[in-house]
Length: 218
Image (tube, rainbow, N blue to C red; front, side, top):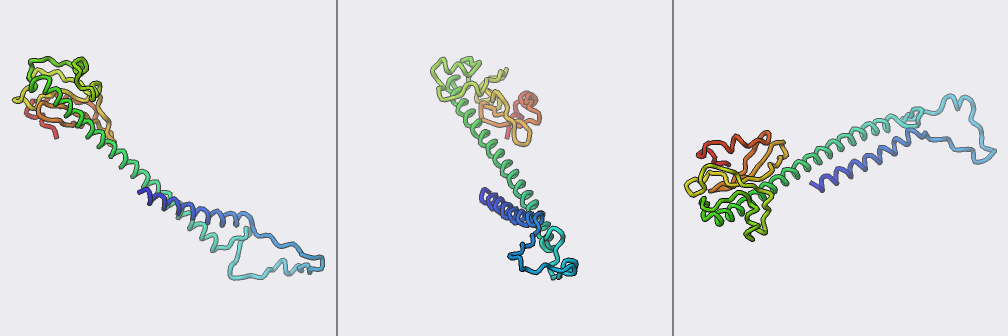
């Protein structure tokens, strides 16, 4: 992609140089050479009024019709190359944003999975014997020093945490992430899995309150 962009930019530059040379020629008509000596014959009135014509007729600017056509062709070519370059740059930007979004999604899922392992160990297999209200509790226990407790939060639920309720939500990303297409994404840690949910408007309450058998996620 970068090589294609360099080639297009080079082509635009070359076309622009040719165009500027011809355009400069059009705006600066050729001047007649001054007489090299006082003995040079002065042209007659008839010679001035009726100059010799050639097959390459030029207008008052000193540029031929063929050169004018070339200027117009170069203008069109430069415009087309610019449009093509802009389209490729836009595509490259979109691909970069999409790649960054996928990387953030994978990082959030991995972090949520690591947190779920820690929560499971702390609560003795997701039992409710130990109350866990926030992830900052792990700092007080000297656990989770390599984690980011401010990135996720515990989700309050009346359902118990145990192997018989794998779809119960335990934690979620504190802040949803906006995707390149304008939607919103949020990673959840369930008793039995990790999932990412997508929302059109950033509101995930509808999905969080679904009946448990439907909380399978993608």
